[in-house]
Length: 214
Ligand SMILES: Nc1nc2c(ncn2[C@@H]2O[C@H](COP(=O)(O)OP(=O)(O)OP(=O)(O)O)[C@@H](O)[C@H]2O)c(=O)[nH]1
Ligand SMILES: [Mg+2]
Image (cartoon, rainbow, N blue to C red; front, side):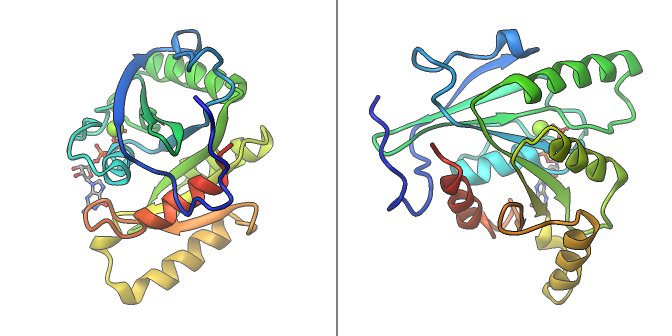
């Protein structure tokens, strides 16, 4: 399909999203329209239960396209969602959360190996979204994730979510705390505020994705 230049595209078009596949590893990841390197993939990363799958649903305006749950550890494989419409062709990838205590050590190690391989070698990754819980202080696991992405030169943005649970008067303080803790250097890196519940920040995220499209 012909790609539309993004200069005038304000945000990525979310119409016609489809769940394509759950893959346990890079070798099982889908090949897009003849060549896997030409369709941008945006990857959701974050601790278990932070709201990665909910973010996908909010961005795509679907209630349960990505399965969400109160129980951490819901997403267990790499789930690929393809969005193909006359304007844009792109992919959201939902990964299992890190740091979930109840997953066995062996399983955690296997997941970590599989996802590291995917994150290091998949050459159509356009941007990783590191989802963090905006209500609490930055967590060690999130800082390690950000450092890993920097070390491997993977483009990323940090998305503070669940902000509907935080009084608006505290947003700025939290944003400052996260920006400093992660040493976010804008404009190459970004920190965005979000709530899957209210839809706050959806258009900002879609605009950010559009800037990394192509
Ligand atoms: N209030 C509020 N709750 C949210 C938000 N985002 C997610 N949740 C809730 O948090 C819980 C976990 O959400 P998920 O989207 O399943 O989290 P996940 O990161 O995909 O979790 P795993 O797949 O286990 O890694 C669910 O009960 C959601 O309803 C948000 O922005 N605000
Ligand atoms: Mg999930």
